[in-house]
Length: 388
Image: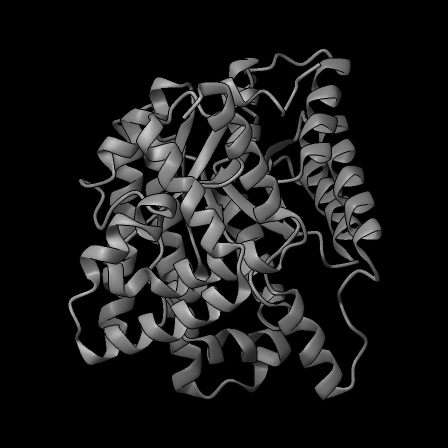
């Protein structure tokens, strides 16, 4: 059985100095008051043009990001690959609103696909639909696209065209591509587009992957429906399975707008559905492909057991585990050490423009029960083992 407590394997990629740096970073992140102050001070400094980029780049940026460009990420890619872990290059620039910016982001995503096609250490590409489109158009399409104005209709067709150009590049270069999940009030639109792209590009194998956020109570039923469609239409449905990232926002919107919350009643229900979804995928792996994006030890162990009991090879390319760079190395490195396919999400982009992502990581580590204390306890255990 895999032991996620083996810190020698978990941190074998870290030098003594980088382990100490991670220790102090998680100590700070574990303090809500420090995080709150740090966020305010950082935002103020960046808006004021103060020269703090170097400090950010040497601390939180280095922990959670690969670099500012694809070229800068090469060292991280090679380092992860040395320990049998792949890289998922994630261009994490947010908040753009112009067509010029959207088109530039499309090209950047295609560049990550080209980089992956030339480097086996990059098994996937990924993008967010909101990174290449206006949220309002997606939201209107989600409710009733028949009410589009002529201009909105053209805008929506442009969004679909951008997505298609990315999926076409992924298919041409045979690079599996994740389309990230987003808020429920635009997700139906994304789900429909994902399925249409799979109908075009997933005939031989899974190239396009949709993302299912299991904090939603309806996703197991959705998965069952997609399995049915995959079998009926002869496509390979790619799935990235995550617990999700918009829970508080979802609950608050449901409360304000007075509709039933789409969120699971509690963590137990979410965990149960995640494991149910894993079972469904493994039982239907002939028409599915899976990336389990989880920092949960029990789910990771459960999937490894499902793979073995089904007689599937540990390195079957249809099944991957994934975690974020800088987090849950005890899961990533121990799974890789046992021969499973593992990849790390490696965000990149200009320091100032990836700050929203970095601040979410700080918030997540502060708010998720036990996340920071678990990271810290493992780092402390390894420091003790190394006597540093």
